[in-house]
Image 1: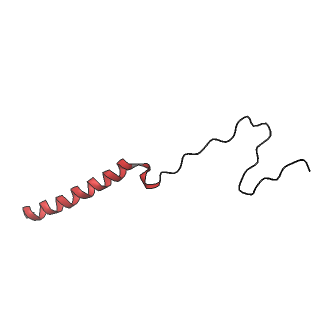
Image 2: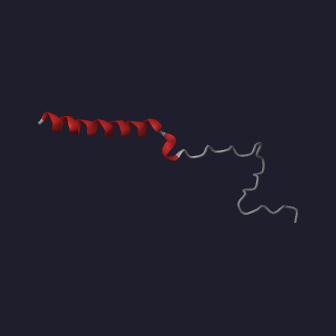
Image 3: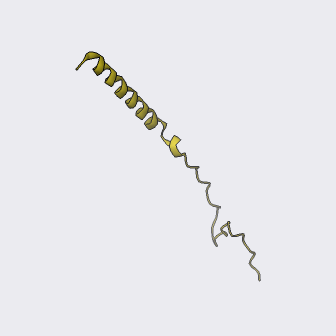
Length: 59
């Protein structure tokens, strides 16, 4: 046999390829869009503050 064995977790190189595969960027998860999270926190704070303003004003 002239072909070498490749471990199961690795992909063998393709014939004719000129470069190895690029490294993928890790998934940012929840921290991918921090401005959206900050916006949700700000909207929640304004909503709670508005509740107290309405209670104090007696509307």
